Length: 81
Image (cartoon, rainbow, N blue to C red; front, side, top):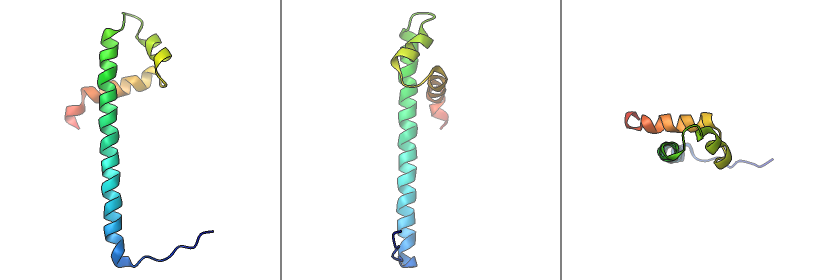
């Protein structure tokens, strides 16, 4: 078991705030990537032959149609975020 060295409580707010800001930045980055994924999926679906979309997702992506729909919905509503 690792011993924890106590950090003076006066130093904690700055460290906590730094971690909070990093978490917000990571969340913002994740949302931006998800929106871009959705935008690209919308383009891919528009270019797919009629009736071939689900098969295209299945053979080309590591996730399924349900996740693709979530990404696309997110991209469609990105302005509301």
